[in-house]
Length: 178
Image 1 (tube, rainbow, N blue to C red):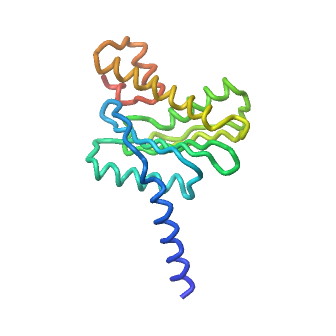
Image 2: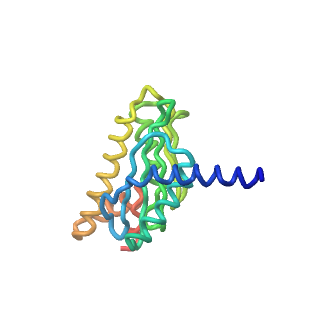
Image 3: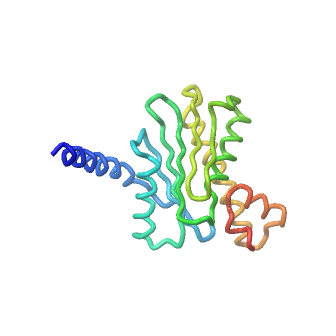
């Protein structure tokens, strides 16, 4: 009986938590990859919930490949960016690692601003409540804007070879074979 009750509580928590990501939206496509975005407050079980929600969105929208960027402000004032992908066409680990490097270059605090991961799962954490969530979000969107510009240049056939490699290094791995 105790195990059953615990399982019921878990399911209730799971349902209420997954509904928090119902306002995730598709921003655009970068090459063959749909980009979904969620911005909000602290979400329990975030990385796992995000993976499940991304799978639901991909199935619903019949995406070839997708990533979800989840930007949350934790209760302690820290910022947490979590990214999940369904393929290696965009390397979210490179995005989080490079984003952390940019934030450290801007603010310092190398031990408190960290990021990285692998092609399909990554995180960037800013453990400094004095660096505002909106400042961190602005840096993230500037990074995503750069990816968008590189994708547009590649799509139009007007990307120099050096910029193509730069795009791959930033995370647009689908450009590596072009």
